[in-house]
Structures are given as structure tokens and as C-alpha cells.
Image (cartoon, rainbow, N blue to C red):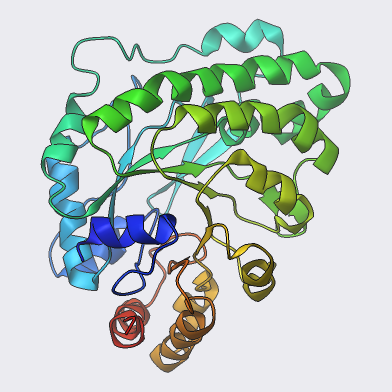
Length: 341
């Protein structure tokens, strides 16, 4: 099977030749060490929303990482801009305080014109160079961008004082993805991966009733517009809202953070209807030994991968502080234990 076929098989509830491996973000410095040459795969975008790197360059660099590891996906950034302060820490851009606190701030939300000539040129170049890898359009369904753009404090006050402000910001982000989604399918992307963090390690950022009654209907509307198989992402403990989260209509969920979520319980309850993506603990990839990583990967493949329905991944992303030997141990273990007979 090709990488594309492998991922699509899992998302359609079929058993592939081996467990696929997907990652959302890989740090440039780690990618450089893994490949033995300068690699730039980060998602940096210019203020007008266009990627810093050309689509062709981004695809070629990401394919080198895939070949070095046996990884199956390459990713293109289809996010609308976040309106928040930014700082850079050890080369990583950190999203700071949101800028949309009141209705007077709404004019700041000036999205790039997706009808402008050349807007999708980078995406076309990316797809033209995807080969047989699984080409992923990284999107947001709206709530993650809304939380970052408003900031948690302003968002929390608005939950009590002005829910319509939250809905206005949320609907603007949702409308962006709804308009863009058909174009992504036409261009030839294979799947969509929606990144919308709505949980802390201690539990959801939102009350379950608020998520169910206010947020979920809009997320479902966006998901219906996405013609591609959909994976949804949120860090943290999603257990209290998992039933509602799965009503979005996704085919897979990521990353099932192992320190706060029980992937075995999720597999037992929901594994017959969607793919589970992730669960290899980031902290272990930083601090533990290659032998520990090999054992962890083997366990996840044998338990969660049994009968299909599993895409292996870190519990968030591959970061600069991870040991190269641990990431390579993960690659070797997938190749050794991930094959279906």
C-alpha cells in the first residue's frame, strides 16, 4: 500500500498493510537531525496569511522527513489567521494574549481574500509534489481559533455577558473553513485534520452544556462542508465531553494524551466507529530510553492496533527537545511490529 492508501484505509474502517504513522508538527531542528541536512517544515505564514515557503519546497522537505522515518503524511496549513500577540521562545512562536475582547475589536479580523488571484498557488504546488504520501489539509473548525483570538479571560467573561460576541467570532472562523473546504477537495488533498484545543490536562475548557449547545452545532456545520475524511485534534482530557465531541462527524480523533486519557477505554467504547490517532507520550520521547519507546510502541500496536482502527502518532507533535534516538526507535518499532498479517 502507499502512504495515502494506508491512511485512508484506516479512516474507512479497513485494515491496511501496516499501522500508519502521522504527525501534525515536526520541529525544524529535530527534522534536520533526523535527515542529516537542513530541513524547514514549519508552518510559518506571512501577515497576509500566505505560507513563507513555497508549496513545492514545503512538500519536498516534508517528504524527506517521511522517508527518513517511514512516516505517512505531509501537511499544508489551511488555517485562518489568529488575532493574538506572539512571542518567540527558543525558536518556537508562542501565541499570546488574544486581541478580540469586545465588539469594537471585531474590525481587526480581516481575513485574507481567498478569491484573490494566486491565493491557492502554494496549495496547488504542494499537491503537485505530494507523490504517494497522504496530503493533509490542516484546518480549524472554529472554536480553537476563537479561544486564541479572544483569549481565555475575555472568552470567559463573554460566556456570561455576551455569548453573541463569541458566536460572531466563532461563525467568522467557521465560515472561512466552510468556504475553503470544497477547494481543498478539488485541489486533491486526501484528508483534513482539524486542530481545535478545547481541554486542559484537568478537563475541558468549556462547560459540557456550553460545548454541546453553543459550539457543537457550528462545528457540525463545518464538518459537513468538509468533503474529505476528517481527523479532529484536542490536547488535554476530553473524557467529560467525548460523547458530544464525537458527534462532530469525524473519522478519527487525536492525540488521546496518555497522561490524562485512557486510550484502552476509548478503544473499547468507540473503537468500532472511528480511528484512534496518537498516544505515544511526548514526555517519554524526551526523557526515556529507546528501549522504553520500543516497548510503548509495541504495546500500542498490539492492543490499540488490533483489528485495525489505529494510526500511531505522538501525543501532540515531535519537538526540538526529543531525543533523536527515541524518534528513530519509534520508527524502527513501527516497522517491526506494525505489519498486519
